[in-house]
Length: 359
Ligand code: F6P
Image (cartoon, rainbow, N blue to C red; front, side):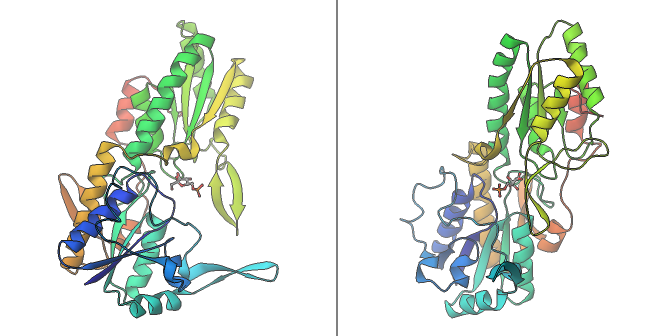
């Protein structure tokens, strides 16, 4: 068996742990393993450097490292590959080239590690006859079919630590500190880090917020002698009747979010007269060493992916359904995003703690 593995989309802490577990699981079965650099790019270009033979030495001591030794890319969808034609970028289907090269290198199966975009691509390849097994990755934790994706716990830990640090300076200066965290469509990071860090206000994409209710909370704290407040905002949060704040757009799609934190801070300043500051945590949440939880989760995902290949359960992703790893059909996993349910116990906990959710 010759197994190929790639890491698609944005990176997440734990990717290297998955690569290690897949490689060792395969080698221990007597299989051969090859890494594809930069998603499908290493196959598409035909460049010999695009493929990395993975042996024990290559994956030694990498489980604790952030990033991915294979490289990541989020603009390399082979079914809509951006090709420059004159002044225009034309989205072109180059999947046949990728498929042909997969066969030419003697690939028997692919382990595709990615979020919903990468897993959709993997499924399309599967439909074209490429045997694929998926591993769910995203710090946003918004993939369906798994309780947790790896990377999420690390992002929450980073954001929680930042909120803790902002608390002391907020209190010293009696300021309102607004912290913008990642979370395009789902507010898991904001909710978990907000609760863990003792935020006063948590704004998530699932609950459009009313800035007046945010200010009511800040004024109530002021009246109770608490001159400072911490507001955690997911990058995809929206005000009632308003849209997402977009930093950069590409080919008509919302690509880069960011800026809602500053808008919220401005509004609080205008409505309450309080001094406000904004911190955007950005990619700090994605970089660096994975937490112990994410390492174990990622190593388990990798080992389980090899098991699915062995059982020829292609077209499936590994899902974490505690305490087990289970096969989940990829179409089911990508049919909808896993957003914070409005009746979630974690949301109820935040409310019970007196946190304002902007509604
Ligand atoms: O999907 C994970 C994520 O970190 C989102 O939360 C964020 O919007 C996006 O990736 C950022 O992507 P990029 O690395 O392209 O800026």
